[in-house]
Image (cartoon, rainbow, N blue to C red):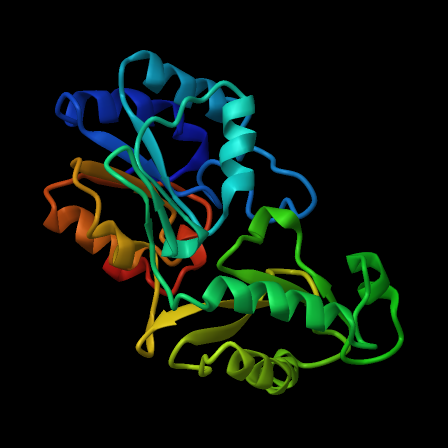
Length: 272
């Protein structure tokens, strides 16, 4: 276990020593590779993070991803010299990009629903184009679309000011808005679509997240990992990673915990 971000350099040597030839490494992004609170642009967690990952690839280790982020993150990392030849779980488990074939989880109408919902919510009077307008707005119930870093074809997010409106009220508000939009795509909330609200630490920024479900069950990174054929190990920060960690161990992989959210996750015990 590597508990501190400043020791990230040691992850490279540890994994090279521990992992059999040909085994890939799946990387969580938020809190491990990228700062989770860098809201406007992608920003590495440490100055040495990307060089370490490039060094791993130079040692013939195949790197993949297991992240809530989408194609934007892949483009950013490749522009910074990473090849990412391993399997890539993106959009919180909705999508697996693999040499053995890509996989998508969710109702066939789900992508159309996300597009329709995004368009409809931008037509509402509560909508603002920028976070700064939500933050400075005097009216309660304002929202804007979340940064592109956390958007995708299968999931969407909106930002709210929890100093103006309690997150529970905004969750109810979005539920009322999205229910008829989902029905228009022959989807049911809770069965085919999940809505959640979370709060940034030390910030009034609340996040309404919308993604798919499978027959009422949440889709997460571990759900789609069943389609991965190449053995893997996983580097995560303990925030929302527990199920994938269990699946990694079940598949004889190594789990390495890095700092970040680990010190404040409610999953610490299970993760460790």
